[in-house]
Length: 230
Length: 230
Image (cartoon, rainbow over all chains, first blue to last red; front, side):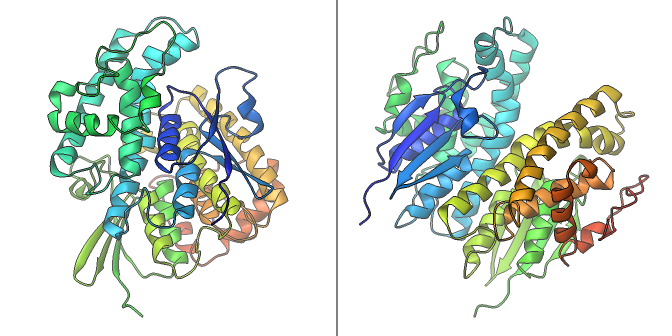
């Protein structure tokens, strides 16, 4: 056995990809220290570690060497590579393809179409002092979210976990995105009973608990945000 | 040895992620048939195969089973999984992290900030009949492209290939994006002599040749688009 590496996660607590990295490190049962970064501030120390200046970034110190993992894909890939058996990707080709499809969907399309609108209006504008949310943008973002939730509801209804029988990176990435939206009360759970059941299941995992303690300045979480039996 | 799978690539020739999939299949020396899809048309047959309706999608028929690979990540991952030794990812953890960082950079940030502006103005507007390019947007997109090219120039100057000593997925994905921009004459090669040398090297690979025969309706390629010693 090799000794455990020393890990530091640089993340922003309400950034979905950062949350996915926290969840994945937690599921891997790797201890890590954390620094919270604010990439929109000019002196954010991440710019020294990452060319794009964005979290999540993991520094790995192991056997006298430092490895810097920039981008969620590099973090998930490193965890998978070092796992003795399939970890957040299933073993079969179809399952692996489905997990990769869903992770890419969340990290690209969902990020652009939902987070980039709803979280921009509700969160980034407050952080960057860009003024109040725009009602038209909120409506558009909520409409797109409803469409994506309807597709996720089908998956949650057919499968134990989003991509199949085992929990996978797709579940962590989905939980990362939905949990931030849920803090702001933006997830239409009533529309999606199977997805709600899935979320209740993943929410009860010890790795998700720390996320439920995060507090956004000036905004209380939605009434059910921390409720495991919501 | 297993028999070769029967593959069909559904792609759009001027879509960077589609080009990256073509290049990766070519480098894997897997024969494949092609269908060209136009995802902006209402009756695009891809919507039957892919929930997001976007190329690239690869159908794999092997041993009586069909596997559908949706999203570039699923295609690259499948190729890597079935390769007998590291193929488009290097073997060492630092190299793998760097390739994953660069692929994610192109597929997210570069796609949003450069393709989403410059290719939208020069290509998508023509395809979707959205009117002429907007000069202000073109200027903004070109400015962002110059910033990214400056970072890539540093990498190309320090390394044999973009992510290190071996050609990797990072090179294919970068070549996919730049080759589309280059068709439209948008790559400021004079600013980046080391990157130009790198591009000349990858352009001479047999896998890239088919891309140089692609023609966009109504737009001739830039003078040096097909020139291997440009």
